Length: 542
Ligand code: ADP
Image (cartoon, rainbow, N blue to C red; front, side, top):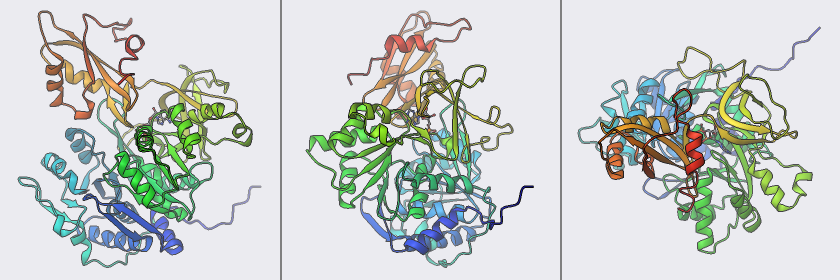
């Protein structure tokens, strides 16, 4: 007969991470680049005190367990305080991507039912643009001190967070929640239509953050200094703000300064040992370092994901600069890192060229996550490194259904990722293609269908198609094809001017090609593969 395990039943909670970090590593530092460029420095203990003050302040504003608090902010200490204060007190931390078009931003704020929105002062114009469309937001709170408080002429009244928490106690009794309670919410705009929200539970965040600390993932402990370049508004910065407090690692937050020179300077001055971000960031950093003949004095490793890390870049980091590249795969729906390159001794003994090829693949699933590839009928394909199919994933921190969706997102218990991959006999997964019709540029999504819809709204346009084309800096950039209605004329500039009013500026196609017709398949759908085949290299030299 089975016997019950006789262990305590303690929930995995975000508040427990904060209290652990404070109790065990209270003096550990958090360095934060402020919006004005200055550096702010304090300890885990100071973070906890301000987080508890903020929790009290949110309660005083009338928010309750289950309320949702939005944020539009960079990686900085006030955003971090909100991460812990909001989730810790049983509310939901909804991180908004400031790169969204204001219309989409308003949509997600409304869909999430944000009652308070916290924002960095640099996003004041954005707040001004969306506030009128978000009638249910009761307070707009600027993440700054009283003296830096922006006034939004014609916009909503704004409170300064420092003022708000000033009179509050730094004691707060964190509620003992069910670990399955929603703690954080992040929307993905990867597919067509409206963005879809993923509501992370405390349990998912804790497990994913624990996993990030593993030696085979990012190897975090109290001797490391961690700089997450990956934004806190994008899948919880891969859970690194939690992982730092779990492991006791010093945390360095780069604020809005993500240009290579500022990042390099911060890495050197704060003696950063480990970082994480998308390939575009590392590409810029390496160029800067090469140009100025610099070296990394303390950087030992970096986690990379969001799009494929080019092999040449892996080689350069590894062989020239002594920085170990950990290449992983994940998505908003997987909370954070789901797979990671994790080479064994035999693989490490191979020639550099082969090692870099291996690291260039997306790696092995971490414990807690299972992966498989399936064909169109859902049949599992062999792990032979060549059979390509849709990548399916399941595990402890994988989404089950989108926020407020009535139906599960799963297919027979697995989440279909929309990525096409192979898995080899050693379990190494490699992304080969994508079924989702989207473009990944600098780590962020551009919806090709939204762009096409925007273009066909022009009275002179008969058809439009957009494909993602390889770009050396941004990974992919949009290329637009337009078929004009008979007798109509339009210039590239006119198309861009028209689109500017409808989509975010960085979504604008790099090139617009006017064609007589588009290749159509049997069902009348544009054959994008054909377009990619013909025009795949247009941006290579740029
Ligand atoms: P993130 O950008 O943080 O990974 P998103 O949800 O915005 O999260 O995007 C997830 C998608 O990005 C994946 O489904 C996949 O298409 C792509 N992706 C993520 N990591 C990689 C990688 N290492 N190589 C190739 N594509 C990747």
